[in-house]
Length: 280
Image 1 (tube, helix red, strand yellow):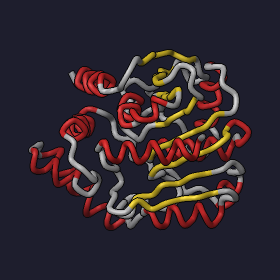
Image 2 (cartoon, helix red, strand yellow; image 1 turned 120 degrees about the vertical axis):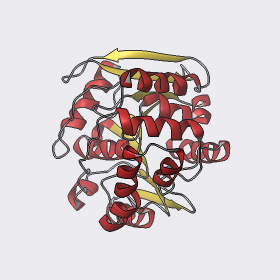
Image 3 (tube, helix red, strand yellow; image 1 turned 135 degrees about the vertical axis):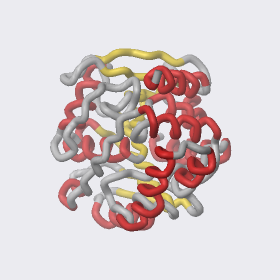
């Protein structure tokens, strides 16, 4: 029943993707991995890594304007999607880099443009540090693993409301839980997140912060977009650290934005234009 609910949400978000969507299973050393491909079949490939506890369809549905320009390649991350490999890869070695390298090899891709969001931003950064020759350009949106927010604020604004919601599953408690995270309210995103909290095993690990040396290994052009009101990964600290250390980096702090950016046509258009200008 729990898996059926999560699968149903995945399909609902997949149905929101404009145009045709192809699903492939690509072999990796950890097992076969699902990858969604959408957008222009003759467009340049853009590899996109989703946030924790979501999935490829959720991210691609928010990237609709990019599908007019790119061939979006979106794998389901191990341990972070109902359609992904049900394994937890280590966070302190090159496991994620090897996983991504296997996917690129299986898809016949060499060096690629890479975009990661939140947990996917951590994986993208880690892979780019480990194998910079495989990444032409790197863009990160509210990435984990660059700078962390206050543990006390996270406890009071997230941990306690999560416990309350797991005990008393009401819409009011769901809104209180998601308000510090969501910039705009979207019924589908809220409904999915509420079910994911109940149905998906939670990975309580916090991605470790990149060392200065790991950031210096990012020799490709890098764009980082932080959120001004992100309690998990404060935008100003994230952008400031990347711009200070990464050799060829630019960044922007998105005003009025929480960790989960707006799910509006206006923001999707703004983000697509920003990424397209960077990658093209």
